[in-house]
Length: 265
Image (cartoon, rainbow, N blue to C red; front, side, top):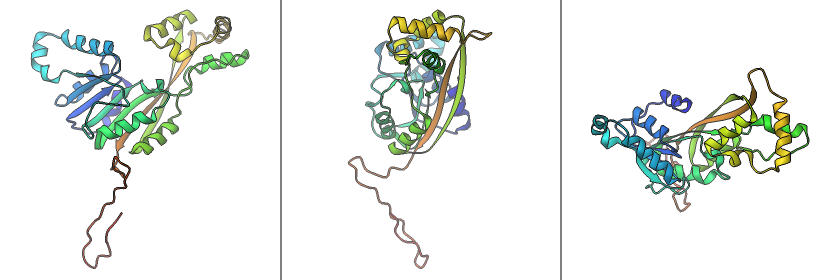
């Protein structure tokens, strides 16, 4: 998967990693493959997703289970903004295509900063504001404002990460265009993913029919185009500047006599 490729360029030997928003556990299994000595946490708000993670582990061969039993993902049911983990207990957090669904991501980044140790890595992906732009354009062409969800700009996410205590976030964007045979195929795809209302929002049936007809007029040779803007980000947990109760952390460095260096705040 594309997010995993970002880890190819990072040297890590983590003791504890977490796939936050794990869904059926694809990310957790990728983390296990890359860091077999690490404890892997599979974190999701939905109990059903965690049940599927466990079921996928139980379906392995008995020999594979025997060899790797100790490295089975540990399911953790939790809200990403309130993780039941001690401070500085993780070295790596992975999150794939989850947090664009949140109305406010800032509390999540602050919680991630709390549970990551200094120098720990956060790597994630999320949808950006150009996602489903064809549907917005179709609506604008006929005077209908579509309620297609508007996602965060990567610059806003970068600012939030710095504010939460991460240093030098690295962000990049990829545009992926899917082509559908028909609008019905697209809607079935959204139902399968369970995100139809989350992506498209609520609009009257007659207006949606008009928007869909306009979108269908944009059909190319390959089919109906629909663009997804995918933001990839990574950031390291910086040295904290404040304590948990808001007091500033002041560091003093002892200099050699006559060296011209002294205490530093």
